[in-house]
Amino acid sequence: MPMITDATATPLFTPADAERIVGAPASTTRRWLEGYAFARKGERRTKGPRLGPSAIRIDGVLLMSFLDLVEVHLARIMRRQGVSWSNIDRAAAFFRESWHNPHPFALQRFRSDSRSVFVELGRGIGDNSLLQLGANQFVFDALIEQSLFDVLDFREDGVPWRLWPHGRDAQVVVDPARSFGQPILDAQGVPVRIITAAYAANDNSVDHVARWFDLPVQAVEAAIRYEVAARLAA
Image (cartoon, rainbow, N blue to C red; front, side, top):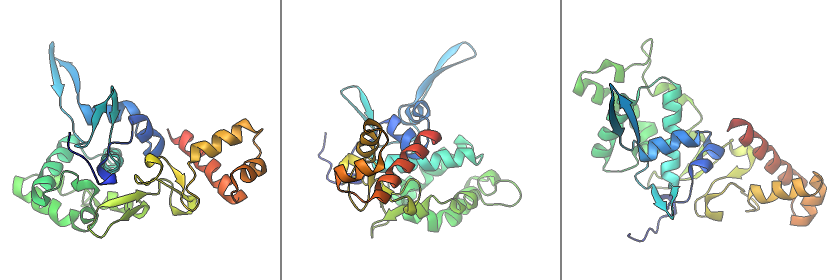
């Protein structure tokens, strides 16, 4: 296997991580990354992977990259907006070929160019459903109105390199180059799980945990709020 030097493409996240970070059910993420088998008219059929070109099993554990995680997040939003998988598949293939990138949905360019490219794609194959979602609404208008891109930091080349799962005000960031991509307090670099585990083990004392880790009380509270919200969303 070739050496991967870009942290955004390094397989770090499990489907369980995806559920905790972006709210995509682990079972759904596995199906999207690895495909699945199903029965139709008495025949066994298979569906190949839809996302996750960086996904790989290591010692039996399915791992995806940060860019895979971002695309799982976007695919989940698209499906919740009612965009069919057939349209997502065709769009993904079109973008990959046009932009020569295995993760087109994760690119900053997707935000700025998606409308015009989707119009081009829809006209090219004569499929109005790619152009509109409901009453004259472009498919990705609804997606861009979401805060997806507002919670991503992009490099100069347009590739995302950090994700703020609950917004920047929450103070918690996912950075594949820090703490193996696990959610951390951005300013202090301490993993959220370590803080919340210490909080649970010390009679739910914020002050005690703050002293133990030499952290501001507000930072400990931010970590606890993030963990509670992540569990509720999962």
